[in-house]
Image (tube, rainbow, N blue to C red; front, side, top):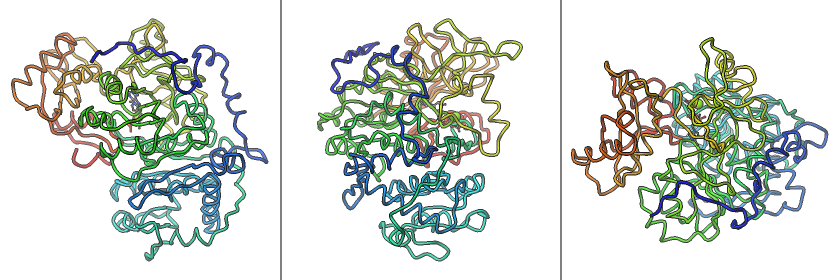
Length: 587
Ligand code: ATP
Ligand code: MG
């Protein structure tokens, strides 16, 4: 298949007129204040995420529209905006009756069940701060996070409680109540806990939203732990303005869309874009409780008639591993836009989208700290595969370097590496790290927020991810980004995935070493190793190509699917592995 270096787009060819048709004009006209005025605000003043996401629609013409379609083992459950209003009011009343007040912290430990979504939104209504945990965490990471966030309420399921919370319950001094959902979605009778199903059934459907202000805390999100111990990022209700604007520009949500965000709400993507943004735009979201399975996913895309799909590179690479032929056994006439976040998206994956779906995959970039998408490939924008796109309206990005005197210098010339920085002031910017003021202060230099990622900008204003500052390899005077090396390896038909590290070397500082997992049908032998080394040298040149390749079954990754290069390195060097609380088991 031909692999275009630029995928040209024209607004006129798209099935929906895109929200961001004229990039320059929209950016020039945009202001956060104007975006804020598109939202309702609380009737008595103030701003609340749940009012914008649920009540605005429940009281308007979309009241009967389906907000969520939950796919479970026992068929689908649909919830309209009006029903979601009643259910979340009930949850808010449950909290209120328990004496849980504004500013208290509620933790969530559940798979993608309806109660989780109801709890998130009901908590916002009560002014209660929400912190989602990943249901696959073990007891220790759960306890650490609840204690760090001083959680007073936990919502979980019967089996998760028994297996993961009960063993550490005595070590959770701030936790006052545990609300439990039965494993079949029904009631649960466990000593020391409350039956959420019964409490919801008994609660009133009417609730007056606690008047939250834009700067009131709404969410605590732990980072993925890719580079070290996860940090707890604090977000406020005003973040909803970013969720709205990015749902519009980056995901291009339109009223008719059927939208599927595959991220788990245990991570920021699953909350910002799995719960909040689609509701703000009044669209129907598909929520699938099951884990990844290639055939199941294709079936969902087809049967649910998904039109906008937001997923992650790791999922796309798994689909690639299963082969484009599998995708072609299904039809996706409604699918019009595919986006991806969380890790660099290799050009190979963008092209594969064209092959499997007839649509390229649109990379976008953001992090837990930014609370929402900052840099994106949007529907009407030409795509340069391998680039994460351009800053969205309202976002000012820059490439910076620390000068000799420690002062920040802007790198204005194109195509030069430096740290990616964002001008402070977008609404969903983190307001602090839990218990780590010093680390938070280090994120800023004057007006700029420093992301810790290295990138470059080309002459057209597209940003290219180079690597995390911690992962960049210094070899014989060159700075080498692992992403470039991994992407080149992935262009070889045998390679399913690659993770690249720098290995200390007396002569050159560090040498490049690649860990490679193979696609089905390829043998990890010396002949293939030599072929891959040669392939990489041809693509990258001898200075950048790996000197060593090791074949592995799978790469260690976080539960949100990111390759943990620091673990590859620690294992290679026989060093301690550090915090592995977010490591996916079997990695
Ligand atoms: P920790 O901060 O605990 O090490 P983390 O940085 O992986 O974990 P997240 O906030 O979930 O935690 O991830 C954000 C990071 O993921 C970004 O800083 C960047 O390194 C990477 N990332 C996200 N999207 C992209 C993308 N489109 N291209 C390249 N990298 C991306
Ligand atoms: Mg990070």
